[in-house]
Length: 97
Image (cartoon, rainbow, N blue to C red; front, side, top):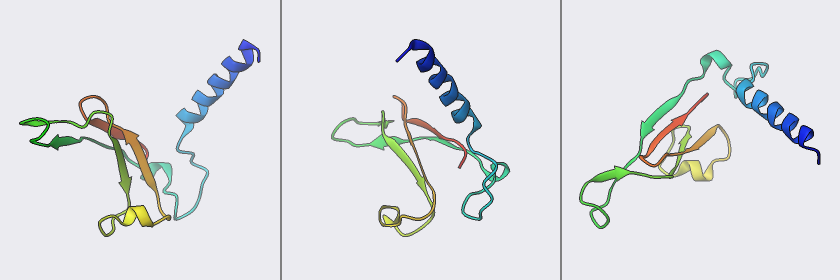
């Protein structure tokens, strides 16, 4: 594979990533771009066996799902689920939800 093809593919991938979420989808299941937002926070852990205080959940996966009974997101296969990974201090950002 030539280097120019690889570089072109990377450029196209960045264009697609920056275009998300697409605004052409018209369905009640897919909120339009102007109805989306972001969720940010910090996931902290308090585990006295590991540390006396609280500490950031380094590299933890953070998920966002529709409201429901505890654990229902694991059984349900409909609706949106958004995932990201926390940084070393437990900070996370889920965009375009």
